[in-house]
Image 1 (cartoon, rainbow, N blue to C red):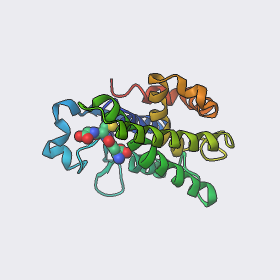
Image 2: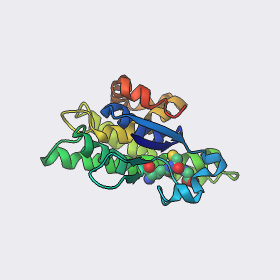
Image 3: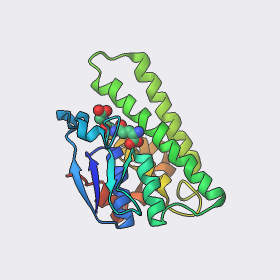
Image 4: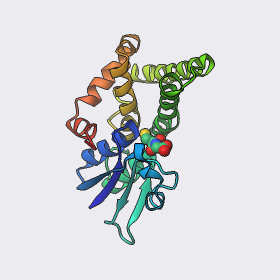
Length: 206
Ligand SMILES: N[C@@H](CCC(=O)N[C@@H](CS)C(=O)NCC(=O)O)C(=O)O
């Protein structure tokens, strides 16, 4: 059975949503980030940067495999299950495009916005404005795309949607005005959020 190492954050939720979607059995180990358990040597062997999500898959052709980072986990589980990733062609390339957008733009920009506007002991207007405008740049790109296509990649729900959804969901909860400004983003958020597997994955770990 797959072991998922996680914590209730958007990056962790991407992995648990995907595990719920593909229906593979898994157990969850909650890594206590606030207590520094993620920096213990045994966890660094699984996730070299000491970040969740990570997982161990013992059910492989050869030795058990570690997979770390939300992007690698989404790709790995899509390949393993043969689901949520088109087999070939333009749609597959588009999934990589939007998956990377979720992992390298939406995620880090959302986290930096939170760090500088909420966590920072000293509030730096330059940093707050920078990440706010970068985040709206991400939302605008999503809004434009979702005005053209039902899901991020035309045709179907894919790992690209999963790589973006948890950060949009938390932003919508903390600032409801977001969805007044971006109606296509709201339509997509409600569509993805209605999936039972997404709802189950967003509740892991407790
Ligand atoms: N690029 C990674 C980022 C993962 C990440 O930032 N994880 C955070 C929680 S959301 C973490 O483990 N933070 C602990 C730390 O930085 O020490 C991914 O997409 O999964």
